[in-house]
Amino acid sequence: MKTNEQLLHILNQFPLTEKAVSAEPFGNGHINDTFKVVTESGETTYILQRINHQIFTNVDMLQQNVTIVTTHIRRKLEERKEEDIDRKVLTFLPTKAAKPFYFDGDGYWRVCLFIPRSKSYEEVTPELSYEAGRAFGDFQSMLADIPEGTLGETIPNFHHMEFRLQQFHEAVEADPANRLVEVSELVDEIEKRTKAMCIQEELYREGKLKKRVNHCDTKVNNILFDEKGKVLCVIDLDTVMPGFVLSDIGDFIRTGVNTGAEDDPNLENIDVNMPIFEAYTRGYMETAHSFLTPLEIKMLPYGGRLLTYMQTVRFLTDYINGDTYYKIHYPEHNLVRTKAQFRFLQKLEEKASEMDRFMEEWL
Image (cartoon, rainbow, N blue to C red):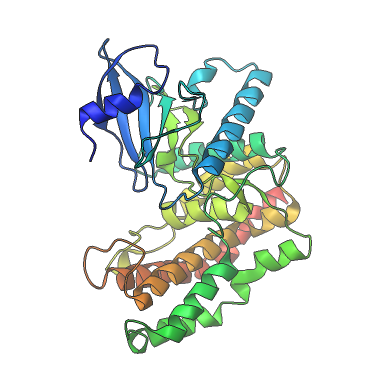
């Protein structure tokens, strides 16, 4: 952990307009280390962040993506003649040496302007879900005309189902922790669904689905709201990269529509919150419908099943491998996560027809 003096030295590599006096831990992110920077005026003016280069191994590509995305969004907001644009898009500062980040010999650091009078939410309500749907739909809509190939994959194969199944099959074959026997039924359930869950890659190869610019972490707490509860901007842009729209709505369904926790030990808590699904989807379609194809619209609810299945596969893969990827809080944690995700998948499968019918008004 860096001392305040060390953090101030790092901040001094950036052209701050006010002198920084302290940098304190900020937020609850799980990947990067984030600090709010207090200046001589007593105000929080900047955010300092240490990029986790174990996860984001190509920091140059990462920051290039972020620069392209924020520049593109700013231009779109200017074309719309939006007011208060500096609060509606993240602004990153180059270093004094005109670099997008500073490397101190140990880690990679970047600075962005703090957005004043902003707040985020952790809870998921129908009202917030509607606003989140509008925000992420608008975010994708503004970036829809970025040419394919412009952005790189900051985490290669992040939402690639065939790749995740390959990892799973390698774990089953090796069984390094001798856990396969106790999870054989779960393995069978995953195998039953492999063909159905690799549809998007097949459709892409056939030219029926295209890759778009996705956020890939569509949670309510990745949106900043103003004092009146209206959306300011989408944040946490490190996973913005090419992918399928099914990933973004699917990730929200997986995390926001589940009435239980991701690692809920009580499977009776887990069900589908249809009002949350309908509110998010309605908001999303209001801002995203202009660039979506009929096939994409029809498949959006499938995205929820796909991302839930994918996370089931990833948790079980890690459990079979002996818990080498995800942090666990007790020995069976990854198995509990697997069972909770699989139960939610089953609940989504039960609601599939109802969710599909809900999409018909936009087809």
